[in-house]
Image (cartoon, rainbow, N blue to C red):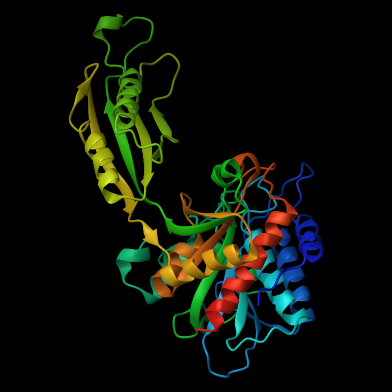
Length: 421
Ligand SMILES: [Zn+2]
């Protein structure tokens, strides 16, 4: 039997949560552990207590609302995402995964749908890392505490607690956590002993589902990626007195180097390959001085390690090269392999969408999500819903209430299939 979630109740949640941190221009600014985030958390508690869910929090202020199952002692099934946002973000990134999880529990409670396992909806603290960097901070810490260091090693608890607010350098993540009314006990953290599976519904944040006119993305993996720093070294000289043919202009060299990368990478002919230079440092960055050093990033993402290796060969071919009399150095910043989601759970999502008659396709995630860290601890998967015009991390971010409800219904049925295992 297939169950469906309530469009009206979904719409009410979307409208209500959009108030907490509203910018007045259709979006929200809701930093982790801020008063606005606490308003959203309070709303979560109110609505979940109303259906008889048990509320718990852990030492990182992650929150859990649980409906007990019929068979005591079984592991929990969890649905979760985040309520924090980027500055001037939208009303769907993160919060939709929490709202659809709530909608699933509300539908189960309203219809007395029997389930053996406890079913939990979860709020992850500080996914965006907009106020306290880095992104994925708390799922990284939780993962790092139970797994080998090579998986989430950079997310050491003591280091993360020292993360400074980007708005007030005197304030740390630890200060915000200690002040949070939602800080609880470490024993309540998501862990592989108490949980059997995790689902995260999220907006796609890209145009693929909309272009294909599909309402559901059955996510199979989070793309592997690498991030390199590319530096060009020249000679600083006077902008007015140095003849052009004598210059060692690091910026001109870097521009040529970047064009070379684009030309060579595009020759691979892989339309699904994405690469970005989003950060550039210019030294000394003075309009009367020829730059003597340029440092830029390149972020490359593709599912297939062979394709990533081909791009890496191109990037590395710049190392030690001279362009316009400027020497180039390349250095690895960081890399991760493609994270594949649990095949059985992916199948439950696909079957649920098909059985509900909701248009769907397989898709991968180019962005990172808390689910990728959870997937190292337990079977995990994700469900995507379309982003209008592909927009995300901005105020026009939009997904129709019908598509949000369809996503909740798919998650509900996938959770119930998992419960029968
Ligand atoms: Zn998100």
